[in-house]
Image (cartoon, rainbow over all chains, first blue to last red; front, side, top):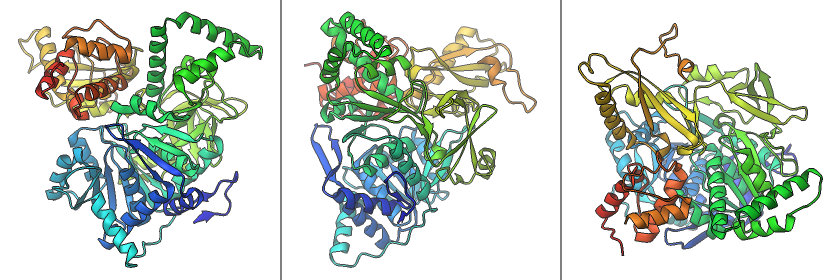
Length: 556
Length: 76
């Protein structure tokens, strides 16, 4: 299903199955995906193979009576993850993109909240999810194993499912999948809310593919693309994966941050999808290596010279910097960066070395890309122009957007949906302005969210809910401060008012020691970037609003 | 083992001067990407797989040494 009104010479697919068929026909035997095993073994599949595997799995799901069910994907980035994604959407299922970096309890909560019925998971998550099969308040009925593993405790493994699908297709007994409508929900994506619970964003086939189309009008990828962005985020899945496949690129997927540097070296890509954390890590490693060669001063001088030359349109130091780029970064020419603020000095240095760094801005509720710089015009400090299908309005400085890529709403949360959607306009909660040419600049946030350099966002209420039950805690407020030298550039601090009854007779030192011990126990269950790094105690209760909420900004 | 950890941390981040009590985040100001990158190097060196969930509990150098010992990793 393709919309006849597609623009820019790019087809506008309306459903994911149509997209899959379209890219398989357009790019057939071209390599679609490549990934590396832990032993550095290189594995690949073509566009045709990706579509064939998805069709086999789709047939199996249909014949097992699972068409139209809610399918959760719980695993690190992998080709199996994508095959399950395409297969599920091809038989009318909606896919629950599950954040695997959360604690075990949170992952189970996510599957319950999204009413997942079928779960595709990789082996580290089997033990976390099996208990759900026996719970009365969940709808989980089937577990399938992605990747390696022996298949104990699951209904079937991916090779079994693909083999069954192959037999169905070869014998002509594969059932016809149900017709998919463009406005059917395709993805359930979790996003940080302003409460302790995450919200579940519902994105339709149409919304996702409109965003993929519009993003591709602005950003032209080179041949070899690398991504380590998690597929459970809209940026990783819709921008990095779907845009790459849409443009016929050869996508290198990395499933684990532990191997990101290694896989980058092995892949030698010319394009990278990244968050500021990765860009800064690449930048740091570059300068560490330069320092080892003793040429730091020489390169700094070369960059300064080139920078001055740029202002007068004189190509000073060009050969030196091109040589540096070739040796340090190989074929790399383009980095697309979003998710959080990026240090502009880094952007300038990459630019001087001939690597364009395009910054964009998105939010899960908008599928996710709202604006991005173009290959042809990259404006420093800006997050680019709004995509073609969006109307953008600034209301008291807050960015509002309207268009076909805006979400359908939050799952089972009409109250929060009504708060952010008004006459089709989505209120982003972000503050910004546009210059005379329409380029968007971000200036801050209205919402109470902590944004990390890895693009992850965290509601402080989530951590406060974990700390509040501690016996010594009467009131707690968590906040993040950017200090440029701690985890992901944000230091998480818990400010605690101890319960006077529980701490009677204890010294401040004893209270703090006990709190540190208990917070360490909580930290051990959290991803590194979410761990609390500092505890302060206060002698008085927090000031409250009329509705008895802590006045956050008085302290921050 | 301390020297090996220092060599790997230095290779990845350029930072030196580790002790048993050094905290990767608080003292060396490493971010989550650096930490995972270092863990990847340990995996390669000892040919073991370290689950991401185990990484959440490795705050200080001594935690890493104790963890590697539990996994049967010894310095060659």
